[in-house]
Length: 298
Image (cartoon, rainbow, N blue to C red):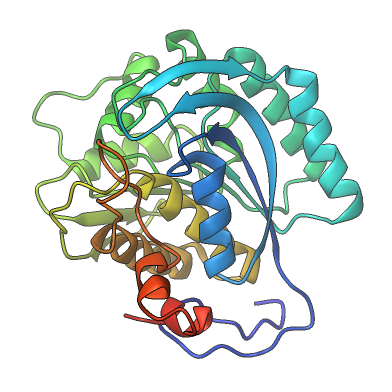
């Protein structure tokens, strides 16, 4: 645990000799609901200093994505090198990449960072509004170049199917989630967490190559779940930065992402509103309240 005593929302908070540092390599959501904006919120609520390497600029709101502008590969790599050379990195979260060139740049960045830094890969392919965020040919490169380096991957059910299909090993229609997790694990990541948002039951499945563990949670029927996947993977990365095991980190990520969906800001925008991991509604109800106290709410 690297001597850390901080425990994320729901437990006691102690002191630490150093603030953990996490890097989000992902796209920017101009609406503030997903992407690096969601990642930085999740890092903050977990007591982690967040940094970013932006892979793409998106013009989007709660209704849809109207434009995407990819960041040149050399600029993605330069951002990672800049923060690592000065501030340092304890964990990496990878989200939207979009192109083969971006994936190659991130793979090189991870080589330079070294194998000891944990990496959480959220295989973002489609936005909440249905816009494609990963080129079809890039899916194969994502699997070959990044999955073997990932400490944890966090696909939802459609993403799990898409990753396997990109390798020509699409399961049969009656394949269950355990089979999907096992097949994904054979592609190289240390741990697979198939998230439960698209399952009949809101249960995440954790598989580390030997143990299959269900992480149960309540399903919240809400129209404000934008950014839930980003929040989940970022909390997981933040907890790895604190020194948690992948299973410990996955349990916290499940809990905080579920709470953020429960408290989603449905009043923002005409489409699916963003999740609320920071407790913004509670902050407005009690402007003098303490952020740490809101963050520790069950």
